[in-house]
Image (cartoon, rainbow, N blue to C red; front, side, top):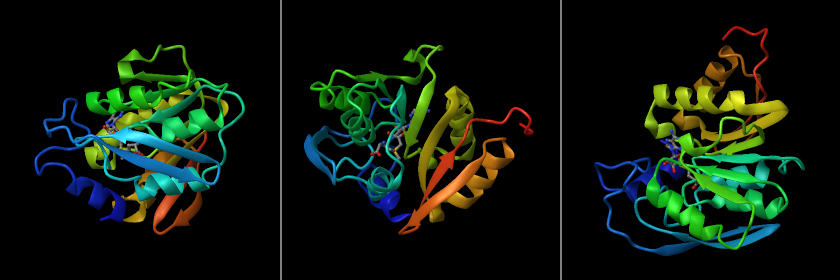
Amino acid sequence: MGVSEHSAERQQSRHEHYFTAEPSAASRPDTVRVQLPDVDLTLATDAGVFSGGRLDRGTRILLEHAPMPPVRGPLLDLGCGYGPIALTLATRRRRLPVWAVDVNDRALALTRANAAGLGNVSVARPDEVPDDVAFAGIYSNPPIRSGKAALHGLMERWLPRLVPGGRAYLVVHKHLGADSFTTWLRGAGWPTTRLTSVQGYRILEVEPCNSAAPR
Ligand SMILES: C[S@@+](CC[C@H](N)C(=O)[O-])C[C@H]1O[C@@H](n2cnc3c(N)ncnc32)[C@H](O)[C@@H]1O
């Protein structure tokens, strides 16, 4: 089991996952500091969202090691939680529209509050993102624990929305199936490169689907 998801999960009730739409966990407001070489944010968090007590290690590694966001947008944080990825992207690219998407209402409310000082973040449930929005960059610490079928469905829903030349950056721990996930992505037609591996966390770079490849 990956260190980060393991400890994040221990903060949830035994029977509830962080991707529950309406967490039943009693609210315990807190803050998390996101300190990176170029970003210093203090974000509101709560119980009932992923890694509400501290910046997840996989998320930190993604933010430290994935390439800087492109200079043209829009950008997407897929599965935003309380918003550490979306807020970092929006801080690094203040002129670009950043979409922050999640299914957890508490996470969406936290990201909305955390983005209040920035004018470039749209926080939305998946169905609320207009169909004609396509992304130059997708960044995600994806919800591995939602299961393979849900994870694959999530990729099939959002990766086709990369613009030509766009890239997705995903962080997945090797103990949570990063390598079989990579094999699946390639088999489904998305050229995927392992950019680096830090403490077992793979950073995957995914290119738009080559229409000639089998789907
Ligand atoms: C591993 S957590 C990452 C959260 C946050 N980005 C972070 O790094 O702390 C994955 C997130 O994906 C969300 N999620 C689960 N299923 C989803 C779906 N179908 N669409 C969008 N987000 C989803 C979960 O609610 C959770 O907040």
